[in-house]
Every structure is written in structure tokens, then in C-alpha cells.
Length: 585
Image 1 (tube, rainbow, N blue to C red):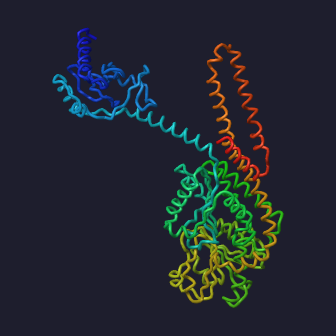
Image 2: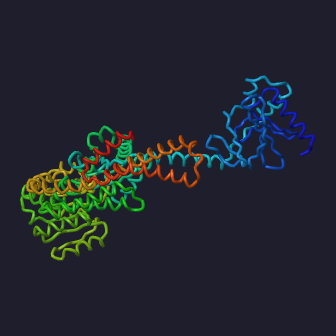
Image 3: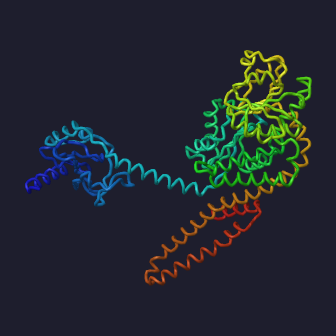
């Protein structure tokens, strides 16, 4: 740079300092100065060459003891990146503090400015404000997010996850409400991902069957998690909170675990001891462990424990004998209703099944055990229906497509519907339009329902759904009371195993806090004695370090070993509570 230009630049800087502008940036200006503000929002009047895209700003750092200033010329290429202090650091390590973004005009209104500098301020006010480089903003945001996530992970790692369940079942919600919340199995993981999207819920798995809809989840903040879950259910079902509150149940901790154990063991089912719910809980576990699943460490372990408990109940008790599924209950129910509704026994009735899924297969198994020789099987696709029909060579199975629905309805006495259709196949309107003759028993075991409730209003039409199977259910429950007591003893054992494992997770944060506190105290005491240890050699200092660590470890060994070794859950909880109180954790 020309010596003369250097002289004038220093002279201008001196004038700025004399006029009391320390702490703000000034221009190193030339005839081509445009007066732009610095892209880093410091007080500056920058200059931009007409031939280059490089902008520069002169930052003035105030002296802490006087009003004198020191100037620095900074180009955008010299910015190393955002600083944790809230500003930017240059490649040389200089910190550039941000300003509030006021213009030079607002500064001139607060301070007296000499006449010689008024044109300079005017140029500053007239010039457009340069924006912060996009890469700098992105880098700052990314660093801030990483630091926030790190703090959040550290805070949550010290708090154990608690398990919860929210849902509804045949005990407390009508089928009209259950079908609103029903989720197809293929979408269970999608629902779990939506639940965990905000980060409030750490782990989640969905279980949706014809008789229940339940979400098992784990979170650090129970209140926020329940709020998130109920909001999701409101969005998914379209039902208002007032309706959901009347039908939903909410359980936490041991109550949630016990509920799942009973569900898996078949004790909470419409048909006590049914085996299908165990396979559904197992599928819930399998989906949670998939790549896009949200089962996590705690929920997946709880579901796996429930599956093991369900297997024990069925192998070690007689609870699974008799009618043990919705399908078998539907067959028994039909046997009870046919003489009353049709005036003839079930065995003499012509039977049709709409659908060729798992429930239909179970229907056919129980029909075969009751001596039914012929049945008509209807489905959208012929291949699946023929495959199912081939499993029952002892029965005469006629396969028909859904196009033949109304001819089949006209020629059969008892019709079961079990499809995955989201709407009603049979309604009051289309049955009346078809001219269907009276004297039909229609048993709908689908959720969502395939048969409209109003069908029962048609004379001679007897329409039933899963909520009507109470008669069969009550009879089977009375027969299984003894087996239910035996099953509950087994479920308690399995629940205690899971609770002990869960406690071990809860003890880890307390032990970590204890170790951190002891280490902090050790370092503080060493620091206090550091002046007295200055004369020690490096080897002697290492010996002191090992000595203090050894003392701390031996003092902590007793309480930590006791927590890990005790198998009794109640004693463990008392010991953990005492440990936290004694060491103020």
C-alpha cells in the first residue's frame, strides 16, 4: 500500500478516537467506499472493490481502561467460523463480537459527531446491509444444535426411562370407538415413528387388534409423554379429547407392565386364554425390533418378557382349553343363536365366510371340529381363498369372488365377515336394495366393522359383532377361574424379573452421579494441596494421583457392590433411595 494512503488511514483512525467513537468500527475508506455494513453485524462501514467480490470491514475494539481504540481490517475470507461466545473468530484467533444491528444513523443520534464525519454516516445509512454468509449461519446453527443435543443426552442419561401404556379395549370402549383408532399391522411402525418424532417419547410400539388398541411407550417426562400420546390419538382418530377421555385408560410403571403381562397371558382377552393375542404381542415385539421400529431397549425387553410369560401360562396351566379365540367364540355363539333366530340348529344351516385371512382360517378350524361339512369361502382374490380351502380336505369348500356377494347372501343362512376393509360391506341401505329375504344370521368379527349396526333394524336380519359374544365369554371365564389364579402367579414371577432388570438400569445413573461427585471432590482437594506438592517429581505426583483414586474407589466399592448384588427388588429400591439421600445425589 502507498505510504501516503497508510498515513491518511492512520490519521482518520486517530480522529475517530479523539471524537469518542471507540468501540465502533470505521471505514478505512477510499474513493470507492460503498459504505456497506460488515456482514458480521459489527459496527463498520465496509469497502468493496468494483473488480472483486471480497468485502472488508474495519472493527474498532474499545480499550477497557480508556476511550482509545485499535482498528482491525477483516475480510470475509479470514473468518474461521462462529464462536461459542456468540460472535465470530478470525483465522488468527481474534474474537469479533456481534452488535445489536443498529445503523450508523442511530449511533449518530446518540453521540455527537463532528461535521467532518457526517458524510461518512450519511453514506452508511444510504447503503444496503450485507447479509451473513449462508455457510457461516449453517455452521453456527449446527454447532449450537450439537451442543444442545449433547446437554440433553447427558441430562436424560441420568434419568431412567419409565414405561407407560395408553389405549382402549373391549372392557371400556365400544366397537364404534375402537374402529376409529384401529391401525393396520403394516402401519404400526409408522405410528410409532410419529409418536417419537418430537423427542418427548423415547421408545414406542403399537398393538392394534379387533378387541384392543394400545400403545406401549417409554419416556423421561411422564406428563409430557401422555400429552403427546393423547394428541396423536386425537389427530389419528378424529375424535375430540372429550370422547377419548371417556374411553382411554392410562397406566404407568408397574401397572403398565402388569397390564401387558395379563394381555399376553390371555387373561385380559374377551375370550380368556385365547392364543391369538400372544402371537399379536409377539408381532408387536418383532415390528419394534425392525430397522424402522421404535422398540428401543426398554420397551422391546418388556414385550419380550411378556411373550415369555404368555408361553409359560399356556404350557403350565389349562387356561387354553376350550373356546380360546374370537373365531371359536363366534362359532359357539352361532350355535346358541341359530335355534332362536332361524328355528333350526347351526349344523343344518348353510354357512358362508367373507374373507380369507387368519380369522377366517380359525373359523374353519372350529367349524370342522363342530362337524360342519360344507362352507362357502369368499374373497377378492381367488388364489388366496383356494390356498386356504386346500387346508381342509375333509370339508367341502366352495370358493367364490366378491362379485358374487349378493347371490351368496341370498342362498346362505349364516354369514361371517372377517375382512380388512376399512368401510362397511353390508349396510341397511344396500341390503334393502338387494331384496334380501329375511332369516339371516350375520356375525361380524372384523374391526373396523364390515357390517353396519343399523342392519339389525331390518326385520328378519340378525346382525352381531364382537361385542355380542359376552354370553360365550362369560361361560368360558367361569370355567377358567382356577387356571386364571395359577396363571397370575406365573405372570408375577415374570414381571419381577423384568422389574429387577429395569431397576438395574435405574441404578446406573445414581452410581454414575456418585462416581462423578467423588471424583470432583478428589480433584478439588488435590487442587487445594497443589502448592504443597510443587516440590514433588512427576513420578511422585503420579503416585499421589493413584493413591487418591484408590481411596475413593475403595470407599465406593461397598455401596455399589451392594446395589448390584441384591436380588430383592424392594430392598434394592430402599437401598437406592438411601444412597441418594446420604450422598445428596
